[in-house]
Image (cartoon, rainbow, N blue to C red):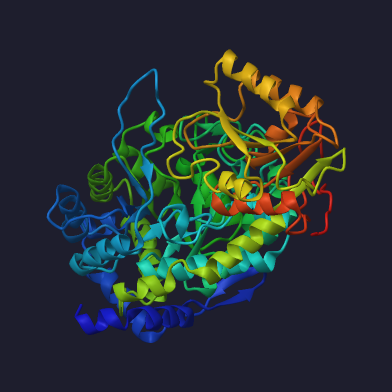
Length: 612
């Protein structure tokens, strides 16, 4: 690819992909327009010329980090070999990670770091240039490219969109996510999450879901999918057939969805039907055991012909790309080796083996399965054709690299952040205000005690709690005293807080509780919860105590005595600044709870407050 083609790629490529990916809606399903003649001819000729080895490799999508990567490095050499020699179909773009010490008594180091947009684009460009076929690159950007890459836009988690209740904002967030993705050379988003989170003990979906109402989840999932398509990006509905009512994290083990088929049709499957009708061109299958669909013991949907070919292809009439969830998750790796898992999921009807723990073993096993007759050539050709078809629809057969000088113009920026801020501010939900505390009316000279409460100390490197909340409070009350508690706080530290609180004019508590992949944790420690209850019961209109919840909204049910509780459903700078503005009345409060808090509040609740 010559330099001139690199420079003109972003605008032309997005425009071309919009032209070729437009769809018609027929009988409730989205039917893509026929490919342009040159694109269709490219798909046919390419498929006909491919060897069995090439076809097997097209079904495998390895992962890569988006931190800076020298061409003269072992890591890039491995990636280059996968693209240039093995001919993989594309890559899954992550952020980054750094090694940390595996110590026992102070496990507070965070290994996860964010990537860089220019580094991501440069790495993908280099791989595109050496790959015999264009690469179809994917990213797990549920809440924007900023979820993985520094400087890109971080939108609120999906549940905040459910609380804000504006599908036009949801669609615009999807569109802007797509614009930033295409700018760095990523073409498929593993979003929106179509799971209906109606299980308060779900350890991994939680705020990643738009809520518990299937119709509202359907509306927002469809809107986000339409936004991605508007930007020329493939939307991927996940985690089929529905991960919302589970209590096991599939990063750790196999989750079970225990419901009967009629319940699945009414609840879990409804958002997938809506997303497919809205034009989503891909579906990700979860590592979920669903006995109502497949009664084989310990049979995840990822490996189930009944779930993929029978239900998704048959009953839901989905003809697009079917992608596995990460095959490196323990729900699969505990069951079988990478090669067998790859063959089993393609046998079941999947098209893409995502993030295998051994990409070469997966490709080799698929190749051998075709040669032995275990996988028919017709079966593998179906999947390869779907992948090539999407590459052609995206215009990658004509132009596959992006212009690095355009990345700063298209990624991040005030306009994109403004949309994220609008969603965040409209999502803030006032669940309780029994003493009519809000908005706070404290003089600048007031003595305010701020308590940050985190679930546990580890892995807060990317979004350190309070990094925007504390400065914003201090700007309003210069005499602010700020401290942090966690599950490792000692009895003496908790007693100190009890002694400090009565000496202040107000107590503002910020609670940060994650539903994080692989952690298996959802709660505050009992000792911290008891302290919060004590502070809540000491509150009065003259000496108020107010709590702001970041992340898991269900935690508010563990401290039911709080006189005032604000929910944001999110972490990070935008959510923290929105909470501060809501506390002091700079913005109105109008969010509505998208989930039920057991024994405390039902979905749809939310007190309204005007801005002062």
